Length: 85
Image (tube, helix red, strand yellow):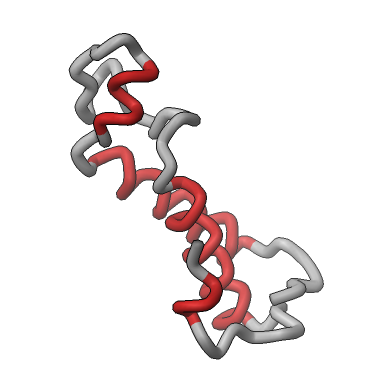
């Protein structure tokens, strides 16, 4: 996508993606990383764990879409299936 800068739209897209991900059920791989602790959104779990593999696809896609929509992307993505991991 080669964005020329990071703008407020991209930052907001990142923040929203993180907040939405935190509210989803926590994958077993993350629970195993925390020795089976039953994590769920709430007072003790407001930001997704760094071990959550969904971070690799959710955040970059949201930020890329914001870059394209706000006009800072030099190479807009046309095939989102290839962009995803």
